[in-house]
Image (tube, rainbow, N blue to C red; front, side, top):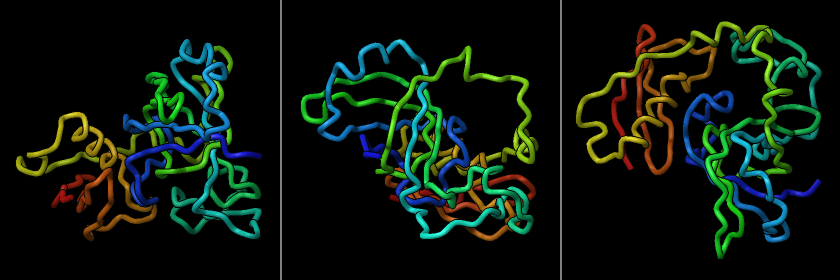
Length: 220
């Protein structure tokens, strides 16, 4: 398969990336390789509100694979079948994400660029394909989420001092709060030590106590 594009996001490292797409309303740009910067290839895509992205776990490649993995959601100790998880350590390192298509911008230097919202991808992740999301076929409201069902209620309250976001725009502030509310810590960690994540050009230090996340600092 050929890489057709790369996505530009505010996640410079793996730690802190949302566990699934659509949880955080962060914006990203999908920039295509020169071979695929053909306007006709995107004709009609603007009519869809969401798209599927097929991409590569480029930072989680392994020479071999294991039939079972230890999902962090189960404490990191219990093993389940790799095909019952979305673990990056798979026979083929392919990821799947559904994101909102905000607009298609036809640029002079980069060709057609897709502006998306809700991506859970590392900056510069290679993309293999784009497909439209079809509500009548792709949506199953009564579907059962197995051992992930409890995540529906898993969100933290985020607190911070008034001056933390003093020089930050309101949209970026809300993105950061959403990222933190979904608890960037490993799922099997429940301690009050100080953690740090990078988002956009900022480094954020935080601490969690009794399901309340406190932002300690935010620096460029």
